[in-house]
Length: 593
Ligand code: F6R
Image 1: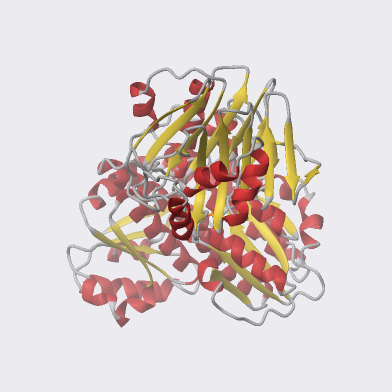
Image 2 (image 1 turned 30 degrees about the vertical axis):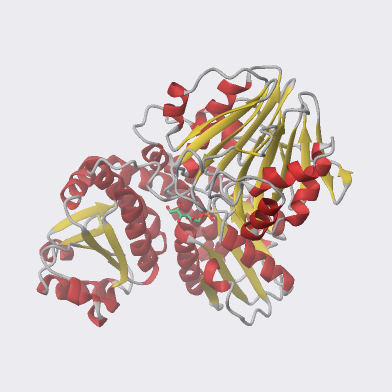
């Protein structure tokens, strides 16, 4: 999604804005631009990468400015459609993330009043509306303009006549960050980590104003007290540290992420706290999420059903929003790495309206999900920059394991044996990473295919979905995750020598049926690559290739299996020379429905 940044302070704005835009690249974008104000507003923008903009743009003087990375929704990627957008006078510039749903009506009205538009974007109505309402006070003009606007927005406004930046939000995230004789506005934390780790989150409907020395937040016309969050992420956390891609670095961080997310559990502090999530009257779980986080939700469903023996549902947040469901005595868990996914937030709000207890599992301290939910459990994955989720998924699983294990019905024996296994997981994952060379070789072979099936059963069916999602998003190979038993109900028609099948095995009651399914697939001419535990001799005789992972209890097999599949997708994409960290058409934080 679009990234926005604003700077005002005692230094030149241009290099700072460009640096921050570089940090926002991971959100996915097709165009970028900045506007800097000195004795007028100078804009430089195009449908190019930030590095190219840096090289081609002239020097712009000024200590206040705004910047934008665009992810096109209204109008193709082009210089004209790139942000910032200006009013007629060229004195007001705006950057925007979100969608203005009534923009056509506003554009027609404003055109009738003499305003001239140059782009196809919905955003351009905003500077024109502000111009219409501007009578010497930028904040008042922005508030008036927002009254006319329907849709979602995080905006930053720069005006030549006032030494300040004004920000506002509705359903799109925005933060203010505090520096020393300088202040920032940004769509998310990694953008500003080079300069500050003190952050104020704006709520929907807030208007924030920053100058070099001050910040002010107003809600419904009155100033409100601001809460400053100290962010523990460091600049190094958000850098590649010598790895070729952020994705590879993040895959390799997983042993540490598991240790960090389990720290409270291992020290014994977390159990009591987590047990309080299970109020006496809770007798069902609903887990909601999108994309990779949804796959964690599906694994959570399997865990819950096996360990707690209570009804557990996992739903796509985007679909849940169209359903009516019985939610009596249900704990609703929303899983979201960013804490800003529009569909997930909408589902959370809907659940709160019907009086459901809500729990957010998120990676971003202070994110919108954490502010909507009654309770929040944080994953300790650190900033995830690569668009493809890897370490955040593993961290989500770690939180789910702990949450389920803290349920009062879990017996001491089960608790102890699972805790023992959990403690070993960082080393087991390290062993998967140590096998990177062999996995990369398999990936090279797979990279020449255009279609690959992933099959699994039980708790490894969602892992098949996740493996396929990872493959398709970064290598552009069509990966299809399927429940192994379902292949014969249709997809068999697609099998053959040009479609290999990756079969995921675990030491549980799905093992035997998986062997049967694998034989069925072989009979249809597809090559089988089996992902299984070390020492699995039966599979050696059937599969064409075997990739092994360390032995773990079946309930933990999604962790080691997923890490192997992440590497497989990574090396397939690398072989095909794909832009791994920033796949085409994708965005890290999906703030539109
Ligand atoms: C895939 C991926 C996406 C996200 C999805 C939800 O690799 O990253 O599918 O998982 O957009 O994002 P969050 O977890 O931030 O709600």
